[in-house]
Length: 305
Image (cartoon, rainbow, N blue to C red; front, side, top):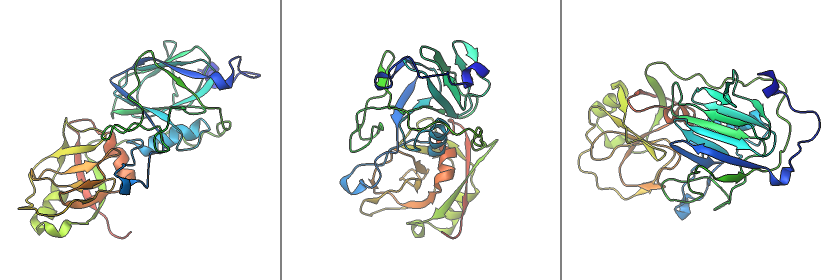
Protein backbone atom coordinates (compact mmCIF):
# COMPACT_ATOMS: atom_id res chain seq x y z
CA UNK A 1 0.00 0.00 0.00
CA UNK A 2 2.82 2.45 0.74
CA UNK A 3 3.94 2.48 -2.87
CA UNK A 4 0.47 3.69 -3.83
CA UNK A 5 0.65 6.63 -1.45
CA UNK A 6 4.06 8.00 -2.32
CA UNK A 7 4.53 10.42 -5.19
CA UNK A 8 7.43 9.69 -7.52
CA UNK A 9 10.67 11.62 -7.38
CA UNK A 10 10.76 14.11 -10.21
CA UNK A 11 8.09 15.04 -12.78
CA UNK A 12 5.73 12.60 -14.46
CA UNK A 13 6.93 11.23 -17.77
CA UNK A 14 3.56 12.15 -19.31
CA UNK A 15 2.88 15.76 -20.24
CA UNK A 16 0.33 17.41 -17.97
CA UNK A 17 -1.42 19.07 -20.90
CA UNK A 18 -2.24 15.70 -22.45
CA UNK A 19 -3.23 13.83 -19.29
CA UNK A 20 -6.37 11.77 -19.78
CA UNK A 21 -8.59 9.47 -17.79
CA UNK A 22 -9.61 6.31 -19.63
CA UNK A 23 -12.93 4.66 -18.69
CA UNK A 24 -12.37 0.91 -18.80
CA UNK A 25 -15.80 0.13 -17.31
CA UNK A 26 -18.40 2.77 -16.43
CA UNK A 27 -20.52 0.55 -14.20
CA UNK A 28 -24.29 0.98 -14.05
CA UNK A 29 -24.40 4.79 -14.14
CA UNK A 30 -21.49 7.21 -13.83
CA UNK A 31 -21.67 10.93 -14.49
CA UNK A 32 -19.39 13.94 -14.26
CA UNK A 33 -20.39 16.36 -11.50
CA UNK A 34 -18.92 19.69 -10.44
CA UNK A 35 -20.24 22.68 -8.48
CA UNK A 36 -23.26 22.75 -10.77
CA UNK A 37 -25.29 25.71 -12.09
CA UNK A 38 -26.56 27.61 -9.04
CA UNK A 39 -28.35 30.91 -9.47
CA UNK A 40 -30.04 30.13 -12.80
CA UNK A 41 -33.42 28.91 -11.60
CA UNK A 42 -35.07 32.05 -13.00
CA UNK A 43 -34.02 30.79 -16.45
CA UNK A 44 -35.47 27.34 -15.78
CA UNK A 45 -32.03 25.81 -15.22
CA UNK A 46 -31.54 23.59 -12.18
CA UNK A 47 -28.45 23.68 -9.97
CA UNK A 48 -27.43 20.04 -10.52
CA UNK A 49 -24.10 19.08 -8.85
CA UNK A 50 -23.23 16.02 -6.76
CA UNK A 51 -26.08 14.22 -5.00
CA UNK A 52 -23.82 13.79 -1.94
CA UNK A 53 -22.12 17.18 -1.90
CA UNK A 54 -20.11 16.53 1.23
CA UNK A 55 -18.50 13.39 -0.21
CA UNK A 56 -17.61 15.11 -3.49
CA UNK A 57 -16.10 18.13 -1.71
CA UNK A 58 -14.07 15.86 0.57
CA UNK A 59 -12.75 13.88 -2.40
CA UNK A 60 -11.55 17.09 -4.05
CA UNK A 61 -9.91 18.46 -0.92
CA UNK A 62 -7.98 15.24 -0.40
CA UNK A 63 -6.29 15.49 -3.82
CA UNK A 64 -5.64 19.25 -3.70
CA UNK A 65 -8.51 20.33 -5.97
CA UNK A 66 -10.92 23.19 -5.41
CA UNK A 67 -14.04 21.79 -3.73
CA UNK A 68 -16.17 22.35 -6.84
CA UNK A 69 -13.83 20.62 -9.31
CA UNK A 70 -15.37 17.98 -11.57
CA UNK A 71 -15.44 14.44 -10.16
CA UNK A 72 -16.97 11.14 -11.21
CA UNK A 73 -20.19 10.20 -9.41
CA UNK A 74 -20.70 6.45 -9.66
CA UNK A 75 -23.87 4.53 -8.82
CA UNK A 76 -23.44 1.09 -7.22
CA UNK A 77 -19.81 0.48 -8.20
CA UNK A 78 -18.47 -1.33 -11.24
CA UNK A 79 -16.29 1.64 -12.25
CA UNK A 80 -12.77 0.93 -13.55
CA UNK A 81 -10.44 3.68 -14.79
CA UNK A 82 -6.82 4.28 -15.68
CA UNK A 83 -4.87 7.49 -16.32
CA UNK A 84 -2.14 8.44 -18.75
CA UNK A 85 -0.36 10.50 -16.09
CA UNK A 86 0.47 9.79 -12.45
CA UNK A 87 -2.04 11.57 -10.22
CA UNK A 88 -3.43 11.56 -6.70
CA UNK A 89 -6.87 9.94 -6.61
CA UNK A 90 -9.49 9.94 -3.88
CA UNK A 91 -12.49 7.64 -3.45
CA UNK A 92 -15.19 8.80 -1.03
CA UNK A 93 -18.92 8.46 -0.43
CA UNK A 94 -20.41 5.01 0.07
CA UNK A 95 -17.83 2.64 1.58
CA UNK A 96 -16.59 0.14 -0.98
CA UNK A 97 -13.70 -2.13 -1.86
CA UNK A 98 -11.15 -0.42 -4.10
CA UNK A 99 -8.43 -2.24 -6.01
CA UNK A 100 -5.38 -1.00 -7.90
CA UNK A 101 -4.13 -3.49 -10.48
CA UNK A 102 -6.12 -6.15 -8.65
CA UNK A 103 -4.68 -5.38 -5.20
CA UNK A 104 -7.05 -4.23 -2.47
CA UNK A 105 -6.28 -0.72 -1.19
CA UNK A 106 -6.61 -0.36 2.58
CA UNK A 107 -7.18 3.42 2.53
CA UNK A 108 -8.76 4.43 -0.78
CA UNK A 109 -9.68 7.90 0.47
CA UNK A 110 -6.38 9.04 -0.99
CA UNK A 111 -3.81 7.16 -3.03
CA UNK A 112 -1.20 7.86 -5.67
CA UNK A 113 -2.12 6.25 -8.97
CA UNK A 114 0.82 5.86 -11.32
CA UNK A 115 0.36 6.28 -15.06
CA UNK A 116 -1.13 3.12 -16.53
CA UNK A 117 -2.29 1.63 -13.24
CA UNK A 118 -5.92 0.51 -13.14
CA UNK A 119 -8.23 1.40 -10.26
CA UNK A 120 -11.57 -0.36 -9.82
CA UNK A 121 -14.50 0.32 -7.50
CA UNK A 122 -16.68 -2.54 -6.26
CA UNK A 123 -20.34 -2.42 -5.22
CA UNK A 124 -20.66 -0.42 -1.97
CA UNK A 125 -21.20 -2.26 1.28
CA UNK A 126 -23.66 0.46 2.35
CA UNK A 127 -24.95 3.41 0.39
CA UNK A 128 -25.20 3.78 -3.36
CA UNK A 129 -22.99 6.65 -4.58
CA UNK A 130 -19.19 6.65 -4.82
CA UNK A 131 -17.11 9.71 -5.75
CA UNK A 132 -13.77 9.55 -7.52
CA UNK A 133 -11.66 12.72 -7.67
CA UNK A 134 -8.42 12.97 -9.63
CA UNK A 135 -5.88 15.75 -9.05
CA UNK A 136 -6.57 18.43 -11.65
CA UNK A 137 -10.21 17.43 -12.01
CA UNK A 138 -12.05 16.28 -15.11
CA UNK A 139 -11.94 18.92 -17.86
CA UNK A 140 -15.17 18.26 -19.77
CA UNK A 141 -17.06 20.68 -21.98
CA UNK A 142 -19.10 23.17 -19.97
CA UNK A 143 -22.72 24.18 -20.49
CA UNK A 144 -23.79 27.29 -18.57
CA UNK A 145 -20.42 27.31 -16.78
CA UNK A 146 -20.68 23.70 -15.59
CA UNK A 147 -19.77 20.26 -16.92
CA UNK A 148 -22.18 18.54 -14.55
CA UNK A 149 -24.69 16.07 -15.99
CA UNK A 150 -28.30 17.04 -15.22
CA UNK A 151 -30.43 13.91 -15.57
CA UNK A 152 -33.71 15.88 -15.62
CA UNK A 153 -32.96 18.60 -18.19
CA UNK A 154 -30.31 16.74 -20.19
CA UNK A 155 -27.81 19.60 -19.83
CA UNK A 156 -24.15 18.69 -19.63
CA UNK A 157 -22.29 15.67 -20.98
CA UNK A 158 -23.91 12.28 -21.35
CA UNK A 159 -23.16 9.65 -18.68
CA UNK A 160 -19.64 8.32 -19.20
CA UNK A 161 -19.25 5.16 -21.27
CA UNK A 162 -16.71 2.35 -21.38
CA UNK A 163 -13.89 3.20 -23.77
CA UNK A 164 -14.29 6.95 -23.29
CA UNK A 165 -11.29 9.20 -22.65
CA UNK A 166 -11.75 12.24 -20.41
CA UNK A 167 -9.25 15.08 -20.35
CA UNK A 168 -7.76 15.99 -16.97
CA UNK A 169 -6.93 19.52 -15.90
CA UNK A 170 -3.55 20.64 -14.64
CA UNK A 171 -2.90 19.99 -10.96
CA UNK A 172 -3.47 23.10 -8.85
CA UNK A 173 -1.66 22.24 -5.64
CA UNK A 174 -0.22 19.34 -3.68
CA UNK A 175 -2.70 17.53 -1.43
CA UNK A 176 -2.55 18.45 2.26
CA UNK A 177 0.12 16.55 4.13
CA UNK A 178 -1.90 16.00 7.29
CA UNK A 179 -4.62 13.39 6.88
CA UNK A 180 -7.24 15.12 8.93
CA UNK A 181 -10.18 14.09 6.76
CA UNK A 182 -9.52 10.54 5.69
CA UNK A 183 -12.85 9.45 7.13
CA UNK A 184 -15.91 11.42 6.12
CA UNK A 185 -19.23 11.63 7.89
CA UNK A 186 -20.30 8.37 9.51
CA UNK A 187 -23.12 6.66 7.66
CA UNK A 188 -26.16 5.78 9.78
CA UNK A 189 -27.10 2.35 11.04
CA UNK A 190 -30.82 1.65 11.02
CA UNK A 191 -33.25 4.54 10.51
CA UNK A 192 -31.87 7.62 8.73
CA UNK A 193 -33.11 10.63 10.68
CA UNK A 194 -33.46 13.77 8.57
CA UNK A 195 -33.57 17.22 10.11
CA UNK A 196 -35.93 19.63 8.34
CA UNK A 197 -37.62 23.01 8.63
CA UNK A 198 -41.38 23.41 8.24
CA UNK A 199 -42.72 25.36 5.29
CA UNK A 200 -43.43 27.01 3.02
CA UNK A 201 -46.86 25.29 2.63
CA UNK A 202 -47.13 23.35 5.87
CA UNK A 203 -50.27 25.35 6.79
CA UNK A 204 -52.12 23.43 4.04
CA UNK A 205 -51.79 20.25 6.09
CA UNK A 206 -53.74 19.28 9.17
CA UNK A 207 -52.12 18.84 12.57
CA UNK A 208 -52.70 15.09 12.19
CA UNK A 209 -50.77 15.04 8.91
CA UNK A 210 -47.93 17.05 10.42
CA UNK A 211 -47.71 14.49 13.23
CA UNK A 212 -47.86 11.66 10.69
CA UNK A 213 -44.90 13.11 8.77
CA UNK A 214 -42.68 13.13 11.86
CA UNK A 215 -43.95 9.95 13.53
CA UNK A 216 -43.84 7.66 10.48
CA UNK A 217 -40.85 5.54 9.54
CA UNK A 218 -40.83 5.99 5.76
CA UNK A 219 -39.31 3.61 3.21
CA UNK A 220 -37.13 4.68 0.25
CA UNK A 221 -38.74 3.64 -3.03
CA UNK A 222 -37.04 1.79 -5.88
CA UNK A 223 -37.97 4.59 -8.31
CA UNK A 224 -35.75 7.15 -6.53
CA UNK A 225 -32.97 8.85 -8.50
CA UNK A 226 -30.93 12.06 -8.71
CA UNK A 227 -34.13 14.06 -9.15
CA UNK A 228 -35.69 12.96 -5.89
CA UNK A 229 -36.22 10.24 -3.32
CA UNK A 230 -39.73 8.80 -3.28
CA UNK A 231 -40.90 7.62 0.13
CA UNK A 232 -43.63 5.12 0.88
CA UNK A 233 -45.80 4.98 3.99
CA UNK A 234 -49.23 6.11 5.25
CA UNK A 235 -50.51 8.75 2.82
CA UNK A 236 -50.85 12.33 4.00
CA UNK A 237 -54.12 14.10 3.11
CA UNK A 238 -53.70 17.30 1.17
CA UNK A 239 -57.23 17.35 -0.27
CA UNK A 240 -57.99 19.31 -3.43
CA UNK A 241 -54.91 21.36 -4.25
CA UNK A 242 -55.29 24.36 -6.53
CA UNK A 243 -52.09 26.36 -6.41
CA UNK A 244 -49.84 27.88 -9.08
CA UNK A 245 -46.40 26.42 -9.68
CA UNK A 246 -43.72 27.92 -7.48
CA UNK A 247 -40.00 27.63 -6.92
CA UNK A 248 -38.66 24.34 -5.57
CA UNK A 249 -35.54 24.40 -3.35
CA UNK A 250 -33.03 21.62 -2.88
CA UNK A 251 -34.33 19.29 -0.14
CA UNK A 252 -37.99 20.23 -0.60
CA UNK A 253 -40.41 17.66 0.86
CA UNK A 254 -43.13 17.82 -1.76
CA UNK A 255 -46.42 15.99 -1.23
CA UNK A 256 -48.13 14.96 -4.48
CA UNK A 257 -51.76 13.74 -4.71
CA UNK A 258 -50.66 10.22 -3.68
CA UNK A 259 -49.88 11.67 -0.23
CA UNK A 260 -46.44 10.01 -0.15
CA UNK A 261 -43.59 12.53 0.12
CA UNK A 262 -40.85 13.13 -2.44
CA UNK A 263 -37.60 14.74 -1.24
CA UNK A 264 -35.87 16.64 -4.03
CA UNK A 265 -32.18 16.00 -4.74
CA UNK A 266 -29.60 17.65 -7.02
CA UNK A 267 -31.48 17.38 -10.33
CA UNK A 268 -34.85 18.52 -8.99
CA UNK A 269 -37.16 20.71 -11.10
CA UNK A 270 -36.95 24.44 -10.48
CA UNK A 271 -40.74 24.76 -10.08
CA UNK A 272 -43.59 22.54 -8.93
CA UNK A 273 -47.32 22.68 -8.35
CA UNK A 274 -47.69 20.46 -5.29
CA UNK A 275 -47.30 21.78 -1.73
CA UNK A 276 -43.97 21.61 0.09
CA UNK A 277 -44.50 20.73 3.74
CA UNK A 278 -40.85 21.25 4.70
CA UNK A 279 -37.23 21.37 3.53
CA UNK A 280 -34.49 18.93 4.59
CA UNK A 281 -31.14 20.40 5.64
CA UNK A 282 -28.37 20.09 3.06
CA UNK A 283 -26.10 18.05 5.34
CA UNK A 284 -28.81 15.47 6.00
CA UNK A 285 -29.70 15.47 2.33
CA UNK A 286 -26.25 13.96 1.68
CA UNK A 287 -27.26 11.01 3.87
CA UNK A 288 -30.53 10.60 2.00
CA UNK A 289 -28.67 10.63 -1.32
CA UNK A 290 -26.82 7.51 -0.14
CA UNK A 291 -29.95 5.63 0.98
CA UNK A 292 -30.57 2.40 -0.98
CA UNK A 293 -34.13 1.37 -1.86
CA UNK A 294 -35.84 -0.07 1.19
CA UNK A 295 -33.91 2.12 3.63
CA UNK A 296 -35.94 3.50 6.52
CA UNK A 297 -36.22 7.27 6.94
CA UNK A 298 -37.67 9.54 9.62
CA UNK A 299 -38.14 13.33 9.83
CA UNK A 300 -37.24 15.53 12.80
CA UNK A 301 -38.39 19.19 12.76
CA UNK A 302 -35.79 21.82 13.59
CA UNK A 303 -36.26 25.27 15.09
CA UNK A 304 -34.41 28.46 14.31
CA UNK A 305 -32.55 29.42 11.15
